[in-house]
Amino acid sequence: MRRLSDAQCIALAEADRPAWRLIMLGVEDAGLRARLLGLGCAEALREDTDLLELHARTQRVSDMFGMLPRWRNIGALTLDLFHRDARHGANWLGLHPREFGVLWRLSDEPGRRVSRRQLLTDVWRLTHEPDTNSVEVHVSRLRTKLALAGSAGVIETHPEGGYCLADAPPFMLSDRNTAPDALDAYLRELGWATSNAQNVAD
Image (cartoon, rainbow, N blue to C red; front, side, top):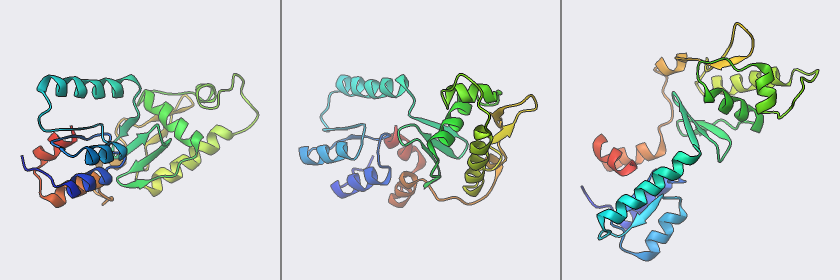
């Protein structure tokens, strides 16, 4: 596998900032390792890192992401729990916290109905049903933002009331051009094969 220059390592991390998907191996300069970690890389290690240590560090990173998922993918959408927003390709949707909460809650059980009462309990943290249409308003605004991002049809109204994520949203089958993922675009610019890109991302 070809070695990246210091500038390419930084550009790669910045293309995916925060670069949580990247474990950078073969970074000899301590200052560069510190900078890469500051950009959010999962790890930045010297080339002579022992395989047992490398395995332990990659396992730690894997376990950390397994404790509480920060990201969820719904077709072309990526939900980011830290930012409490979703992005479609490189474009953030700019979701209101409750809009994000609704989308995250529905993604707990894709295809299964989540009632209005469940949304009020889980997202609004209410134990009673208020005399407002706040849930419906937030779902409507969320649907509008999803449609503008090219992800119409993600949220369906369930026949028995409430909402659910579509099992196969129409946008997943769309040939609409979207902005590429910045990390993917940078790797393609470097001319890496898909297999090499996957090795770096893992």
